[in-house]
Image 1: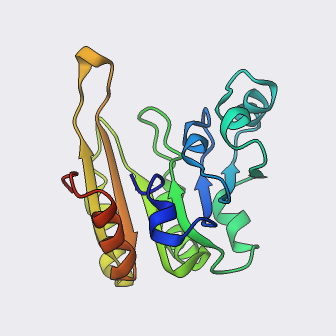
Image 2: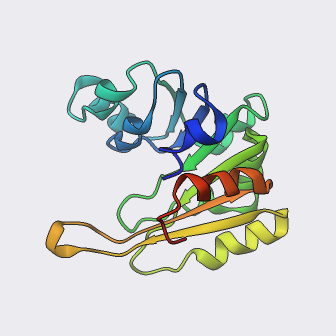
Length: 185
């Protein structure tokens, strides 16, 4: 929802950072004029995207930058305040790369965002409730958040999905809500 509304929130030339390429599905939210940059630690996933095994990246954001390595470390070496939106979608199945949810990691993500930036974190998991972890980080940093809980629909092949949107500025949160008035947060 936030990636679809990026143009409404930040304008046509929004700068989007995405931690975790996976199959590349998030690339298909890119609109003309938006700059997408992916951070990926797994070379195999990037190879699959570049050779067409996964075609989302080629089809939707072929000019996206791909930064190889641990996103926390790569982002630390880059300029601050470069992204309007930074999405953390690096959890595969029920594996949780906990190093991406540490206090230091969250600090790095906050540093990478523009002052009115929006951080999106995918926290779906069958075994662990990560909401308290993200809530604690938000409280510690003075951020506000919204959680989106999409329930499973097994008959239609849909898995449950939990995303949290965080910002230190209420304006992008209000714009996110305005762009999606029919959605329950």
